[in-house]
Image (tube, rainbow, N blue to C red; front, side, top):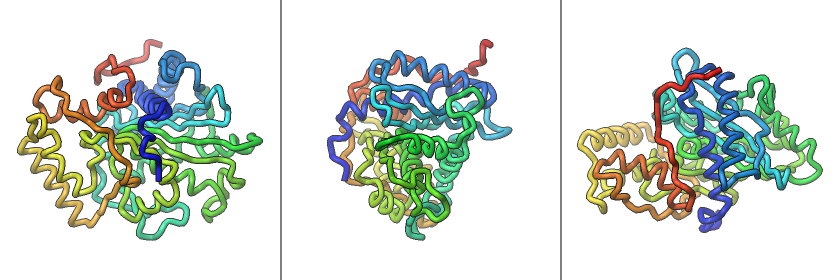
Length: 353
C-alpha cells in the first residue's frame, strides 16, 4: 500500500497547489471558450508566481472548461495538464473541485449518489460500481476537448497522452491531482487512464500500448466514488500509487459511507460545536436512502492515516463555518502551505475585453 508518510512530502504540497489552481475563475460569467481563455491566463500566472510551483511547470493541455448547457451560469468543471520544466517526462492532470457558486454542480456532480452504475473499464468485476455523479463527472472529462487557441486544442485527453508516449523515448509519469470533488475525480480519472492504457481494455486500442507511462494519483479531501467492489478493484490497480490525503475533521471524506456519515454530528464536539437538528435529520435521511438502495459506498486506500485535524476556535461555534475551514484552509495549514488570501465571492466576474 501507499507509504503512510506520503502526505508529509514536498510532492504532496505541490500536488495540492496544482489542484487548488484548477479552481481559479470559478465566478467568471462567460461562455466555455471565453472562460477557458481567461482561466488559462490565471493558471499561467499562478504557475509563474506561486512559490511552491514557480517556474517548475508549464501548461500543455487545456484548460478544458465545462458548463452544464442552458442551466449553468458559472463553470462546473476545469481540467488542465502541466509538464515539469526540469523533467519533461513528468505530467500532472489537475482537476477542480465543486464550484461553490454553481448550484447545478452540487446537484449533478456531488449529490447524485442514489444510483450507481457499473465501472465500464479494464477487468473490473461486474459488481464494481460508482455513483451516477462520479460517472457523469468522468464522462465530462473523457469527452472534453480544449478550445481553439489553447494548448492541446482539438485533442481529447487520451489522444494528448497518446501523442506524449509516442514521442517519448523513455518512461512517462502521469499524476492526477484534485481536491474535494476533484479528489473524487482524481481517483476515477486515474483508474480510467490506467484501465484504458493498453490492449487489456477490449473496447480500446489503448493510449499507451507499450506501457511507457506510470499512472498515479494524489486525491485530496474526496468523498467516496464507488462501492466496496470498486474500492477493492481500485486498490488492486492503483492502491500503491495513490496518496489519499484527508483531514480527520473534514466532513467531505466522510461521505458517502453510512458508517462515516454517522460520525458527523459529533465531529467537532471536542470544540463544543454541535450539529443543528435540521442537519441531523438530513444526514439521517441520506443514510436511510443509501441503506435502502444498498449502495455500500467505501473509500479506497482505507488504511491511509488521516491528517490530524484540530477544531479551529477562530471559526466560532457554527458547524458550517468550521466545516468550511476544515475542508479548504485546514489542508494548507496541515501541509504547511501559505493560507489563501482571498475569500469566495459569487459576484459575477465579467471579461474586461
